[in-house]
Length: 171
Image (cartoon, rainbow, N blue to C red; front, top):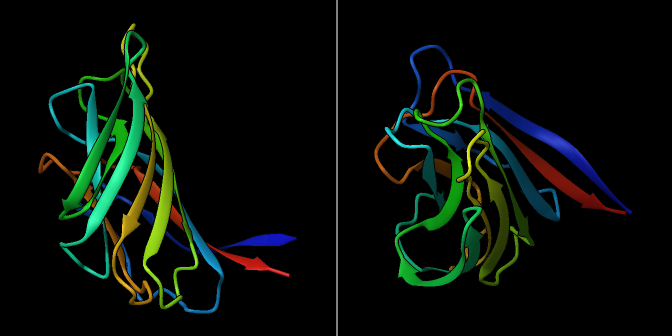
C-alpha cells in the first residue's frame, strides 16, 4: 500500500510567472508525483512545458506518443537540455480552461539514473486538442531536490495555474 502526501503547492498569482518551481524537496519519500493544471499566455491553443531536475540542462532523453484528434505520432528526443512534451493550454484555447498533466518520478533519491513518465492533455472545445504520454530518463545519479517547469516557448504561466508536488510512501 502507498500513500500520496502533499508536499507543496504553487499557485500562480495575478502577474503570471515564467516558472513554477519546487525547491528543498524532502528526501524521505520513495517516489514523487506532480499534478499541474496550467495555462500560458503563448499565442496558440497549446504550449509545451520544459522540466528540469536540480537545475540541470543536460542528459534528458524521452520517447513520447502524442495525438491531436486527427493524427497520432511518436517521437524520440535524446540528449536534450530538459524534459519535454508536457502540454498545457495557451491563450487561443477555449477561455478559462487549463491543460493538465501528471509526472511520476520513481526512486528520486536513489544513486541511479532517474526515470519519469508523464500523461498530459490540453483542454480545448474544438476539433484539435492534444494529448501526450512520455517516458523519460535523466541520466544523472544525484538525488532530485529541485524541480522546475517553464514554457518551452518563453511564455508565462497565467493566474490560477496550479502545481502540487506529492511524496509517495510505500508501507
